[in-house]
Image (cartoon, rainbow, N blue to C red; front, side, top):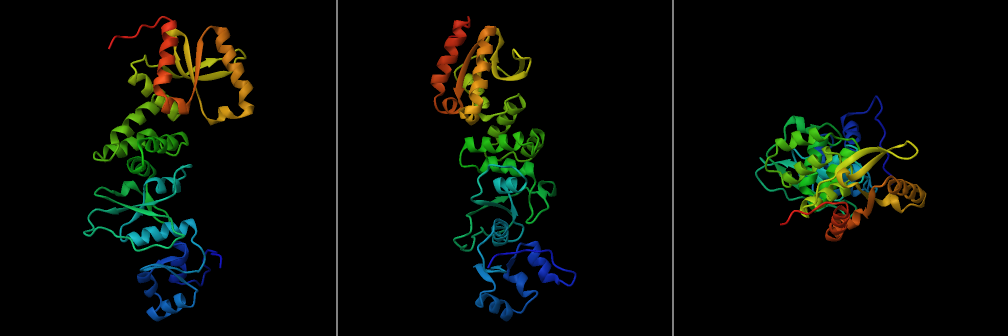
Length: 321
């Protein structure tokens, strides 16, 4: 049976509204406030309702939808639980983040460690985190309640599998204009013990400095690591046709440009435009080097060596170590 959730009519009672507001997911305690325990058991045994886990009920018998998974996770985590991290960020409109596991935040004041009941196979995994700091300003009303976007992004950086994944979350939220860097920075100032806080603060500084892609941020890190001069980023230039262009990285003293190619550079429709742009640079007299994001992240020594050679050819002298 498919799940169809319609706004209850004017004659609907409290149970119908509760089922609607929670996408058809209830705790057993909520159900028996409106129905007798025998009627609840009868609906489950007849197949009208489904038992998702100990104490968690689905008021239909179909596969779980994403909203139902979110409600099941929050209700299973217990009192005070809210959606958080990448899950809350996704619900807030940030695209491209991992949707498994579902991240839930609970108050650290709860005495016992939370052990989730066994959840069904069609349910995404659930990761429960604890916090001693969750003021009202860090919460966003919703179905279910979730942390605010700035707090969600800050937590998602801390809970990411790797530092690179954390930086992707922060850059994605900023580039998609879901949060401002100042908003995330304000939350981080209230979370001095947050994991990867230093990484988040440094990434915010890089993004605020003009890098609008992670590969460009990695390029700046590479220059620092190999003691190369830092480039100017996102500099405006007009090409031969008068069109305004933004340079990924530019060393004006040595007339060197570096272009960072993302996935769109592999598309045929961008190929000729890229060639025209590169030819225009060469005609003007600047040198240009092009690297893929993969090269910058996974072959930094090779990239640094080529940039150093290009700078040296233009007169730069490396400082002895």
